[in-house]
Each structure stands twice: as structure tokens, then as C-alpha cells.
Length: 330
Image 1 (tube, rainbow, N blue to C red):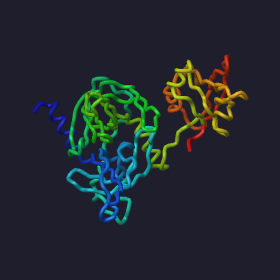
Image 2 (tube, rainbow, N blue to C red):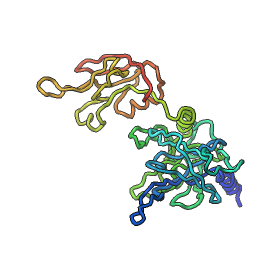
Image 3 (cartoon, rainbow, N blue to C red):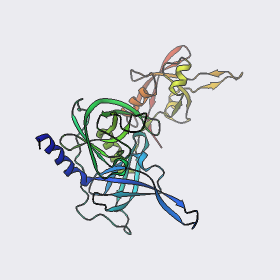
Image 4 (tube, rainbow, N blue to C red):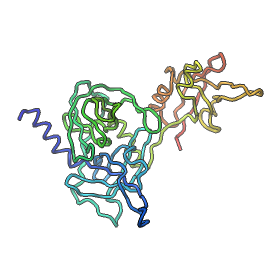
């Protein structure tokens, strides 16, 4: 074997005990016996985060589950509880061994994957390893390189996920939620999506960077949810704004009592004759140009609750500046 092959084999052997299969179960009533049965409605991958039994996977893997089953290498199965989710970043935190009446993994079985300190210094061309359970097959390894960084994909909630890693390592259905590792065997991201017209791997896979995952997971474990700053507005879809010739964020409504409302930002309305009166158009935040919703979310993702933002709005034909103090989402 070549030295490169030995490194790959070593990474696989060290990492697979920490990688699990996650099965999404749903309750269905048997048409003949009328008994309620739990049947699989989807499956993905996941990995051990810590010795407390926290398992990380994608939110879309466990959506609408009535129960979740986690299977380790060797076939040991355990029921998992959902601790919390972050729909905006497609991250879910599960935990096994929390119910006294259910079997818990034996001591020493819960081995956390080592985590890279950050993913911001990744370079295109670095070697990567993806481990998961594609198509229900047990612990499969694929290799590739970093094909691109700073990508953007849409989450289930519609909010963009920033700084996504693009890789040519094969990521197929069932790989979702599994770890993406660097050449040292450190967790660098969560395999989450592929870009393919057919649904099978076409050489373009995406992974949520470990920086984003760590931020979401730590908040979920501590508080049961992720706290993010919000402006308290609803705005027109980018396509609608483009059709209206609007360059920026067209505010449809500013929630009463919210940060934008208190700052005096106006929503879209109708006049006494029923004609549409466009609301404020957000064109910049803290000096950074805002051309679409992605630009606005980039600013909010870097902001904190309680932070004051200088918002430039186009009101009629005049530009104005207002100050909004961000508050936490519900």
C-alpha cells in the first residue's frame, strides 16, 4: 500500500465508530389490525458530538419524525431524543441514552469526532473524506478535494446558509448529516446537499462548515434553541423586487413593537384610493450595500442581539438613515 492509502485507511478506521445511521420513523395505522406501527420514512447519517450522547445530523433528515433510531457500526440500535434544531442552518441535535427506561450505550462507546478549530482557512485543493450511509449501505467512505469555498445554499426555512464548502467527494442520498473530514481526520463540516438534476452525485456536493455547526450546536445544547438577532420585518421576495425595479429590500411590514417599527421603518400600504404605496427600501446596513435578501442575511448573521445598526432606506425619492436595535427571535 502507498502512504496515501495508509492515511485514508487509518482515518476511516478511527472515524467510523463515531459515525451513525439515523433512521426517521413515523407512526402509521395498520389498515387491517388498526394497530399503530412505526415504519421508516427516511434515513441519513450523523456523528457523535460528545460523551454525553449528543448526535449531530441535518434537520431535513429528521423532519416530521415520530421517533428516531440511531444505529452504530456493528448494528447496535438506540432510540434518540431531539434536543433542538436550527432550521436556518439545517442542523439538528439528538441525544441517546437520556431515558432511563431505554437502553443506553455502554461506557466507552460514545467517541466524539475531533473537531477542527475553524473552517475559514480551508484552501481549494485540500483533500477531504466523506463518511456516511448512502442508500442505506453501512459506513461508506468517499474521497475528494475542496472544490470551492464561500458558497451559498438555501436552507429548508428559505434563509441562505453562508460560507458553505463545495467538494467533489461523492455525496449521495443517505450521506446527509454525515461528517466531512480533513486529511488529519478532523471534522470540517456536515455533508448536507448535492447539486444534481437526477438526484444522484454529479461531482458537486456541499457541506455546512464546522464554524456554523459549532455555533448552532452549542446554543441548542445550552438553551434548547438557537437565538438570532432579527429586525422584525417581512419583505418582498427578490424576484418581486426585481420586477418592480427595486434595488434593495422592499419592506412589506414592520411588526409593531419590533426593532424596525421602533426605528420608524415603514411598510408597504395602500392609500385612500386603493393604490399601492411602496414601503421603505433598505439599501445599506452599516455602510454595506444591500441588494437582495442574501446581503441582508449576511449582515444579520454577523450581528448580535442588542446591537445597533445604521440602516439606509430609500423613502420615496429621498434617502434617510435610521438606527435599529436588534432583538432576539422568539
